[in-house]
Length: 110
Image 1 (cartoon, helix red, strand yellow):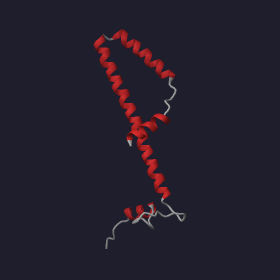
Image 2 (cartoon, rainbow, N blue to C red):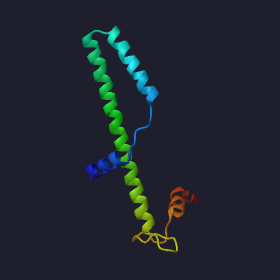
Image 3 (cartoon, rainbow, N blue to C red):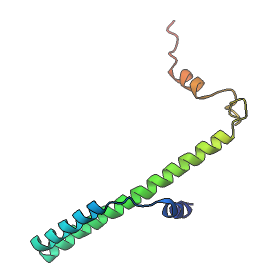
Image 4 (cartoon, helix red, strand yellow):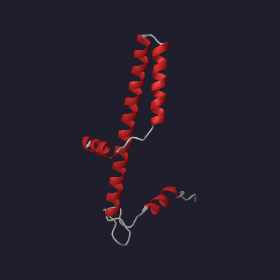
C-alpha cells in the first residue's frame, strides 16, 4: 500500500517555487569548490545529499500519515447514521464527549 501512497504523493505533490534558495545553494556550492579540497568537498556533498534524502523521506512519510488519517476519519464519518451516533458495535451511544468525561471523572473519596 505504501507504493500506492507514494505514487499518489508523486502525482499530487508540487515542489514550491524557491528560485532564491536554488540560487543561494549554487553560490554556496561555488564557494565550497574554491575553499575546500576534493576530499572535503565530497564529504560535504555526501552530507547534503543525505540530508536531502532524509527531507524527501519525511515529506513522503508525512503525506502518507496524513492520507491514512484522512482515510480513517472519512470511514468513521461514513459510519455515522443521520442521528449522529456511531454504529460500530460497542460504541453505540457513546461519543468523544462521553468518553472524555468518563476518563477524567475522579473516584469517590468516601
